[in-house]
Image (cartoon, rainbow, N blue to C red):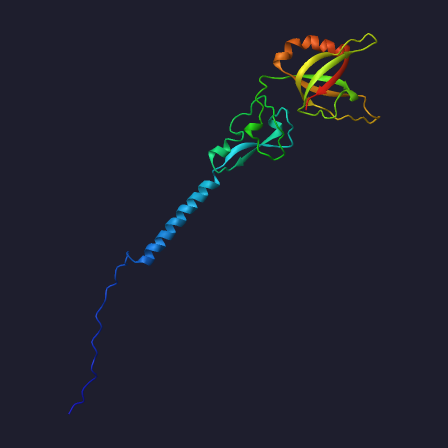
Length: 217
């Protein structure tokens, strides 16, 4: 009698790969995270370039000082909103020809619009004055407002004459000399247009007497 052969087991049924389940909460959460990261990254890149040019003080600027391109440096700054940016002088345009300061501005400080003087319009005429060292108040410096007086020389000198009223000091070189203390110093004042017609008479008076400055505080 023949022995029975090995019995073969039936093969498992073939299964097709199932389609991904898009409704899987984990997959949806992952896609949401990727989308949020992409949006945040785009916003950060956009903000990195969201800067505006403004003027910054290159060095200390005094009250009343006339400011020019050599006193300022252009810098890109990012502000939180447009209102903050509008508080400072934009460097997009050309710096106005005549800019005076109503208050001092420190080195590296953004130039605020509120510090720009509005009373002075038009150019100033620079007038150099040779003044005795003891005829200049110690408090007078660049930006000070002074009156310029002239006293006549000689025994028959009359009362002092007011030559310039309310003029700004533009430069005050330091009183120094290698040969000893200086007896005179030069002070440059800026004469506005409304006083310019009197310049010939004022200059003649300055040449005929001694100059005296009085300051205001």
